[in-house]
Amino acid sequence: MGPALALLAVGAVAGLLAGLWLGARRRSSMTPTEPVVQPRQAPPHSASPRPSLNPLQVLRGEDLISLAQYDAQELSEELRPFLRDLARQHGANEVTLWRRAAGEDAPLEIVAWSGEGLPPVGATWGTAAERALVAWSAAERMVGFERRDGEPRVAICPVRFASGEPAGALVLQTAERFTTPRDALRDWLPHHAAQVGRFVGLFSTRNEVARQSRFTRALLRIARELQRSHEPSVLERALCDYAVEVTGGEYAVLLRWDASQRNGRVAAYSDATPATLHDSDVSAGSVAGAACIEGTPNFWEDARFLADRGGLLRDDDGGLVAGSMAVLPMMRGADAIGALLVGASRPGVLRALEIRNGSVLSALAVNALEASWELAETSRRSRTDALTGLWNRRHFDEQLERVLAETDRFGGACALVICDIDFFKKVNDTHGHDAGDVVLQRVAAVLHEGVRTVDVCARLGGEELALLLPQTAEEGATELAERLRQRIEAMMVQHGGVTIQVTVSMGVATYAAGGDGKATIFKRADERLYEAKRGGRNRVVAG
Image: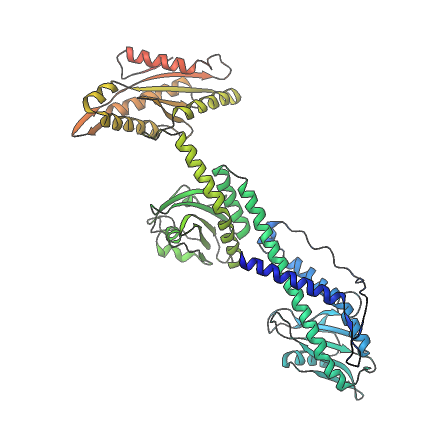
């Protein structure tokens, strides 16, 4: 936060100084007295409005070209009045400011001039000898003159920019002769060049502050969007999609990490994610696990060699052959709560600048993600039976209403199976309540493992369990119940050195869309259960 405030403070000062300097351009004279302040005139060619960009364009750097063009045009227009003052003061027909596009080897270009419209092209300006003299003066940082008929017609002074870029040049050109004598002009030019250099430096600082501000606003906008997503699955998927957008990757995977257990799992992934990264565990010895333990981001422009480093998510998965890869831990204090894994199929697709965006995104998302996970875990505990790990009666009742409503809406049928452990009181009385708990846990595990993910498996209370089966007719529900009954009968529970054989009785009831049994489905399933008990137990009764 400190560096950001400092940067904004610098930007404010830069903007103030630039405004004061431009608002009070001073028209110098040949004598060292204060010149008359000229009123500022609006530039004849105003810059087009600053481009409006969405946050993802800003974060991906897609604004660089359009904003650079805007900034170059604005700089030219802001400097034009000052350069015109110089032309009038020294009797020049034209004053131009030259600057390198980028790097020491780049050619000098005219970025501002005293004339109307866009500056001329540097490659076609003047004669070849004059262009060479401009380049020499900028490189050697010396004032230079080009003479015609014994009179200086071109005066060149190097300009040093506060940004630390290679020197440019301030060039005055006249058709006849300068009104300022050569020696006086040699003295004046460095002062003018220093003033121009300072202004360009302030202008560049202001623009950099503006770019940082846009970057910050873009990230904050995304952070606000993430904060609105309270449902974990929605937030997780949104985070993966944003990671793809801000990094330029082809896919992103969100890993949830347990620092105390030193393991994790895949929580969500974006479209185009390789199947090998779906629904996987994450081990401590993997590349992703090591990044979470160390809390250090890892980035590989060419990640194909990762196959030689072991597993990407698991010790034994053989790594993932990929072109570009980054693992960005999401830190809460000294521990990682997860990580963003971003990848692409070709080397060089991911770049350091955009991976930085991914790191900032992961840092911004930590609070929202952690809060969402904690709320979901709290909600899960309040709806889960502590002994068996199944859903509790509260959750079951809510899901029963939902499934019945969806059956009416989408058609088909749903089924309810109520299961009761036979002679459970006898197990408690004979072997103790600890043994009864183990029996309950083993039966619950068989039921939970034997149903689909869309089914609801719950403990209603005591030894009574229930299965809620959406889009399931009576025949299918009866077949499932019978299969589970047989598995439980074949199961032997070992506890305290004794073997306990367990059986269950089950009652099955169904509801078809638009039928009249909606309100009685639970009662009917319970009645079938008692029929199974009266019929000798260890059986399934449907009806």
